[in-house]
Image 1: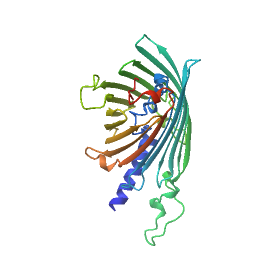
Image 2 (image 1 turned 90 degrees about the vertical axis):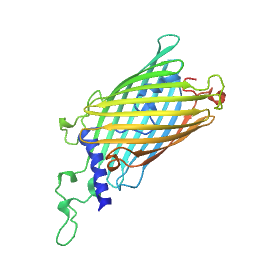
Image 3 (image 1 turned 135 degrees about the vertical axis):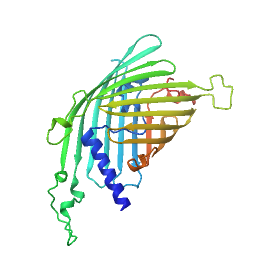
Image 4 (image 1 turned 180 degrees about the vertical axis):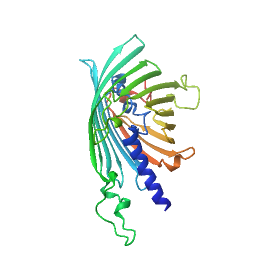
Length: 333
């Protein structure tokens, strides 16, 4: 009975967030893939990268949300702009729910001074959400006397459907040449409808997100036992969508080719809150970064709505100068 209750709660939580509230979903690795929340990061340092992320939820709930994220970006030096593309897919096991998003971002860099840079971005994308409740059994399908399950239900929730809409966003990122950046991104500028029947009450509200990153060289003069290129990286993202808010905080210790970090994720919804705590580790090699992260619920009541999850990510850095860094993997190198 307890397992069944968890299943129902998990399923209803996703439905409430996705359909009723129109709350956006987030990945676990905003510190390593900040372009997910702010596409202007595709132009940061005129980089060329390819990245992939897979997240798998634990088995506490029968209905667990899995995520897949793929992105690629490159800088066109002669024309002085960057392009980024990303593809995101999430699916809820044993429920028939899936969401797919694809977007193209254009980023134009501006040199404000010899020390400060601005990256302005414009994003256009398309999102498709499918939900198929054929795998679920509704109350009116159960014959209480015989125990038989009828194949037809008249419950309104039993209607399957598909939602598709275009999405427009804009973003900006300001960075210095040493250790600091801050950004702002706006998503759903066109407030697309997020319902099958076209009800205007279910429009996606505009999502506003602000980011701040700061990197500290903790062994600048090579005077302690840490590797010469050791940094403390602090990253935070604050997002607001209607009456809902989300806070993501990351603290990462970068020890040359290896980094270890922790994160805190606070979600404030209308009727309940869901908080998570995470740990992550990354190994940096000559051409790519590979990492793992683990997230778990924390706080009163969070374990009732949030499942444990583990994620793996791989980022190829195609910068021709990367192989010459010799352990200096500063974000601002």
